[in-house]
Structure formats: structure tokens, C-alpha cells
Length: 346
Image (cartoon, rainbow, N blue to C red; front, side):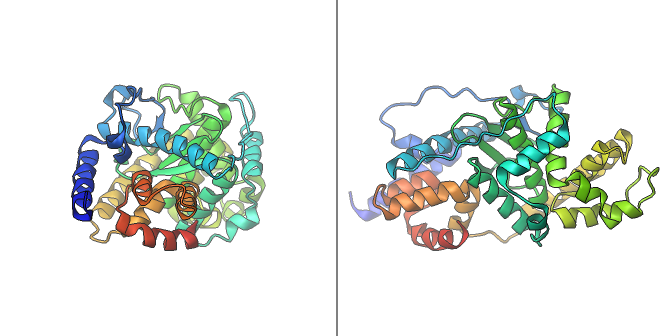
């Protein structure tokens, strides 16, 4: 088969993969894979949707996460590497502060380091890297509507997986990564059961406590100067806490609620405003005419660990250019750009 014929076949197969929401590699299998049973554990903006409402896109993103975990383990084995075990555990009966401290210790993040991350993008990148160094594969769902799911997780060991929705704001994605990491610590298969409000509230509180450590938060000028009996927090106050610790305004408010510095009613009322703002921000991002090149999208979706494994195996001639295309969903002509970009970001 000539080069032009191969490119024509690749283009046609890529279109089929997009239409049927299947990994490109699935079209080159010798036989059909076993039927995939979609999990029901994912984090949504709205609790009104049930697992029965799963879109084909959500099913595809979950399947892709499972596939990438298996591929990552295979790629490690091919170069005689082993995944670092993530051993941090928790139970829902423990104190939130205790679990949050354990999470931070497991990923090795200090408050001093956290405060040096000056931009939202830098904070997300660094939290993602710390989680991967701790033994968790981090991915981003690239085609999923934010209204359907903000993230989900896979607690299988070794190499558990946390997935955030790339359409969410960076600070929202940070909170999702920590929320899902808490599910992994609970060893609940990443379950974000929308009908189990206690578990969801616990994971939210732990994520908030991990982002905003108690002593440091209470010691900020914002909290010190706020009237103790006032449950209402001005937007500029939440913005300041958000900038200092790298969490979203909603995450800051969740943390203040946990510490008894606001009320459940005020949080729920304010969250409605946040949801409206999230939807508006998503519409603005979707209306933007600026799109990053394919290799940048691939790295952002697959994450530092998975991309590094693919590039390393390719450089060692363990896999082919066609394999790289299958693993990362890019055309072979973008591989050189991928190698250059990954050398600076992975």
C-alpha cells in the first residue's frame, strides 16, 4: 500500500472513530472487544441526571480512560518500568482535616510551593504533575459537555486514574482532580454516586481542605478581617482566597462552609450564581475561534505521564508512528511537533 493510500485509509478510519466514539486503535483489532460496561461514577454539575442518561460521548470518554490506563501499563512494561504505587487510603468515617493532610502528604505539596503558582494554568499543571508523580494517571476528557460531567475516576491498582473535564476552568479542574483522588483513597471505584450525598459531601470537603489548609486559611488577612458572625462573603474576598491558594471561588466557599464560617443556605444560593457563570464561560470558550494545534491538544488530554511513555517508547523504537497515532489520536505528521512539545512540558 502506497503512502497516499495509507493516508486515505487513516483519514477514513479517523472519521469513523469520531462518529462512533471509539478509540482509533479499536478499528485495527483482529476481533471485536468485549462489550464495555460503563460505570456510573462521575462528577456532574447537576444531580438531576441519572446514569441512564449517559451520552455516547461520556461512555466514550470513560472507555478511553480505561484503555489509556491499560496502554500505560503495557508501555511501562515494554521499557521495564513499574508504576509507583499510590498507597494513601481513607474512610468516610475519618475527620476531613486528617484525610486532607494525608492527601497532601501523599502528593508532596507544601503551602509555600502552592503559593508560588502564580497563574491558574500553572497551578493546574503543577497539581497534575504532583498527582502523577504520586502514582495516579491524570487525563482530561476533551469532548464532554461540562453540564454532563466534570470528572470521574478509576480506582484500579496499580495506576488509578482521575479525569477532569477540559472544558472546565483550570481551578475547577484542580478541585475535580482532588475530589476524585479522595474517591481513590476511599477505594470506591471512583464512585461519585449522585444519590449518596454523604460521600459526595465528604469528598468535596476533603478536596477543599487539601486546597485550603486550615491554619493557613484562617491566618489570611481576608479571613482575619471578615466579621466572624457574617455568613456572607463578598466576591472580592473569595477571589483573593482563590488567588492565594489556587482553588476556585466555589472551592473556597466550600472550605469556609466546612469551617463553619458560612451557612449551607448561603453556599447553595451562591453556587447557583457560580453555575450560571460556568455555563456562560463555557459558551464563550466554545465560541472562541482560537484552537491549539493537534499535538498540544493530545498532550493536554493524555497528560504528562501517558504522553511521556508514548514518546519514550517511540524514541526507543518500541512502537511505530502508527502506534503513536493510535495512542494519542493524532496524525503521524504531528509526531515531530509532539516530541518537541513534550520535551518541554512533560
